Image (cartoon, rainbow over all chains, first blue to last red; front, side, top):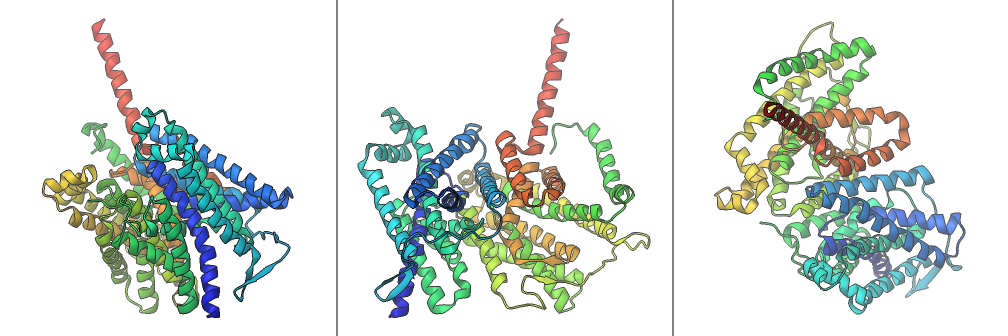
Length: 293
Length: 335
């Protein structure tokens, strides 16, 4: 029982992170029908921005959190405006957009290495209490905080997308750009904001990972692909599917590693991804976006 | 193929290229005075085979793969392990590596061929990662946990005593490059090749015209995996080292970059792309930790500025130059 609870909690913590990254993928796919291979590196970006604001500048944690969110948002929007939009205007085949996002991911990884060095940076303890015991399970306080923040972010995003005027406009322009445009919605702006939002959510995930995993240049690339697996499991393009899929993936990974064999921990996500792509590409929420022929 | 050049001009250009290619290792020996530059040429030849294979898949049948390095690694491990630990001769191990890659490619393509662009690319990324982790966690082979190291295997294909090893390799590889490129051309101009292109242009129309889409997509994947697997199998004996990490996304992206840079769906495109990118990487190698940063920036600039690839860009330039000449001629005759 004790092992079960420990695994359950750490599965939910990492699952929450996967869910946030998966949300970014789904948002981008919904808004522009594209896939960003740099989404994972937004996690890395966020983690380093956290180090920059919290450790280097010595700002309070909440200010650092907000600043990271804003910086990543601007970066994501600049990526859409500067690179993706230019390529779309040139009417290139989609592979160039994939390759452009891969190039951006190389730039983020290697720029981070050039600025911060290749050694793992440790995020200092944020809370005065290092460990917290819940239901007889002791864990890092940051781990619990990360799960709580993940859930809050997911609920906030849900409220933003469904209750606010702007969120509704974003959903509208994702559903039918032409109709949305004729209703007076600035679809170009909402696509840019979607990319920005995806980047900033992932960056927060990165900042929360920092205290648990340490900050290194390839932090996001593996976790980013696992987030993608979460998005596919839930149903690619579906916001709620992404959250559920991410959580399920985190739980599956942790339980397999805990009960069966830890060496295969990293393979689980990829095997689940491939199985879902081949057998049930529409995911749990039956989102019809993937199948061809 | 190359409509921008007339057949009259083609022959002398072809002869000139052949002479340069044949004399290259000797010229490089004279100029640089060391083997290193010849080795780079050997790597270029290996990559030409691998990237031509990727071109069959992406350039002709329109299927994306971001996991081709996995086939490269499968070929390399198969050939290297068989040769190193079972003393199987090279002429058996290299085809064995290529054939295993082909089989796995066909198996992967069987379910993957129904996936759309982005999801196919992610499925292939996942495939590459699975191959990587499989090799990474597999029990130690020989005396190293990260890949294995072969003893040097000199091959004596063209046995000329005063030639040194990498030069021998160069001609050995050149022989296979020519064979693989000829095979690629004849495949492209066959019924199957035309089916590939029909699928690339419009899957539904191809299906309507009686092309078996699923079957041809799987064939394209298998042939492509054969090329890349073969390249990996010869690579491991050339470099005498392979690590599981090669199966990861980075190497696959490198292959794709080479293909896109040179231009897809052509004979010379992959060759130009491989030469250019490999030389570029060699050129910025002294920058060490900034190498990948600069590579990323250059990649992004080229994609944004020149999305048709180098070959496409040059082709367009030649066409527009010709058109300008013709209009000038017309203007003159009008006067």
